[in-house]
Image (tube, rainbow, N blue to C red; front, side, top):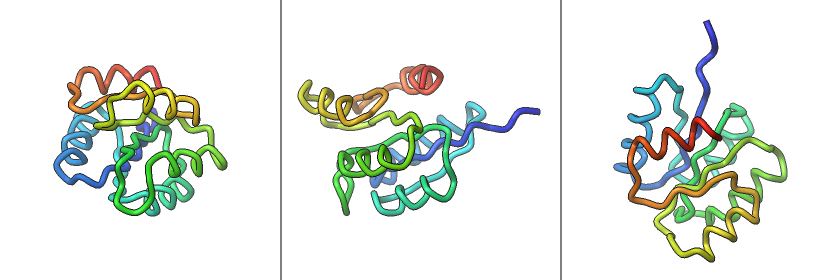
Length: 118
């Protein structure tokens, strides 16, 4: 029996977070949820997830700052999941250490494919 991969979802929008969590759990992963950047960083430190799904538009601190903080302490794969679809935003996130970038809206299949690669 292998341990389930733990995926940390840092997403303040409840509906989107629920959608992502449902996809993850129904595909055999374990989900952790954070509604803002500070609790996301805290969960990252305490639980050491296998993968992080990070929204950029968070209520307390910007997702790019969360990404920088994660990179200071961990090389856990981070997939940015954001409504910010401009190429400049994507390049900036990848330059800051994101492993991948998914633009909202996205399909369950696309997200799962990126998780498998991550």
